[in-house]
Image (cartoon, rainbow, N blue to C red):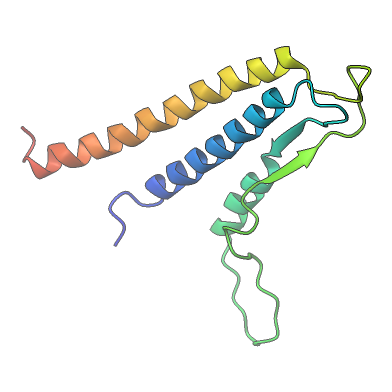
Length: 132
């Protein structure tokens, strides 16, 4: 029995995504002066595809049939490099203004997820205390 349905799991995965995105942006900022370093980003479409596929449950009538969804941990999100651009003479393509903006956006996103998670646990605490 799941107490909150899939809400806690979805929030947990979203927080994981925000954490990986924060690490990726931090690596980009740390390597802003590194020659030939290419900026990396976290692709969200894999997360969306995963969530869409989780709601679709296919019936397998033969053991050799390929399942419609694979393991959630293997394909949750993907880090990709942008190798097509160069912003400085040393081959680096990290735009520090863009990275700082993305870092601020990701921080707001992360804090909203944590607030929502705290709200869920606060509701549970209210129920345990009998509504007091």
